[in-house]
Image (cartoon, rainbow, N blue to C red; front, top):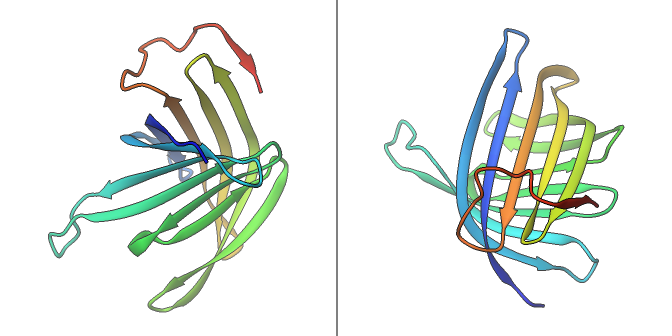
Length: 160
């Protein structure tokens, strides 16, 4: 399994019904490889700002991108597993100190665009908590095989 060092830029937007919040942007370095199932995989760390204890939290992330679905698996203290399948609802259960919480994801868009030295991934989805829609979300991920992220992504590209 050949791994490539990449730079990952993630922008997220959330609308809780009172106007859009965001974008929240994270830029991280990570590794890209193809797994045994043919998924394009990204492994990267995300640093969450210090909590009330004053300690920053590091979340290990695995993003698996297939032809018909995308999975985001977060490990450590921010443990989560979200599955994005266009025009479908997926459900996951997350442990909390008060018990399990049901989280639903209604995906309307999962589109990957390949460029010469990387790709972009656009996700649009509704996030549901215990069967109630909490927010409408968008996630944009840009991946480049070198350390320089282009300012303008209108370069020649093809749809995947």
